[in-house]
Length: 364
Ligand code: G6P
Image (cartoon, rainbow, N blue to C red; front, side):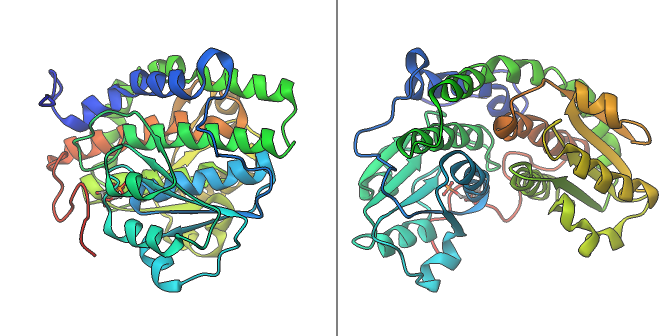
């Protein structure tokens, strides 16, 4: 069936708005009746390591998942972009899984990286949106992300669905390795199952973001900051913005700011801080204050507690629902996507077909 815009101005807008629904589909598949449901053969108990390989947005999903696998399952986790991995020819422990994340399942570098891993690892695992794709077929195990057809070149709903599948895998790894107590597992599952509802709430901030985007569209450079699993989300936020608005943007680990990028800060550089009120919140706030002391304009994206504690002196704030610590990137992906979207709309760029980019890169 042909996919239509269904009244939206762009496919990207439609795909952002669809996230509560497709995430719900993925949840029903992977977390039915409050239990984990993953394919047989995915046993993480005896592994020495995981290797996650992808390109673009899918690579940032892997980068978030690294925090989850290491923290929730105590499983060392290596991540790499496929174009580096394939030629680096890294040694791989036999007692390891190699996981390939790809929306299309056809990205040439990711496919080549997968072929390099055959025979070297215990299992190859695909996390893909297209179940009939080359990567899905060539892996030992394929997990569909169930996002539905994604048309916009800038990946949105595929990213959050990739995160959901990786989250389910990280929890399974935590259980297999005796790292997660049953009560904690229940709590994590409850949080994940609440995400579609929270995402709906979050989509309600579209109008506010549309207004903020008028200012962002005038900027030449924009920085995104985050810590912990929010750091890769800062990278993804910057990538989205670059891809469709052509504004130079960089994502940085908040604590790394002082080692270079702080030199860029003045009134003309908006700084977007992705900071749920978590364990590391106070540290991120002190990095944010360093920005404001140099007249940087801060947009703070946080929950009620975070905003109550740290809004003073910011240019603007965006209020997010509170969400338990490791899972915030799934929810905060939404404002990151909407900021890129409305900034591109304000600039009048071709949102669904940005210049020089392809939806799927099947040549090297
Ligand atoms: C292209 C697309 C990106 C995507 C990347 C990886 O660059 O423009 O949106 O993240 O390829 O694609 P894949 O299909 O492997 O996820």
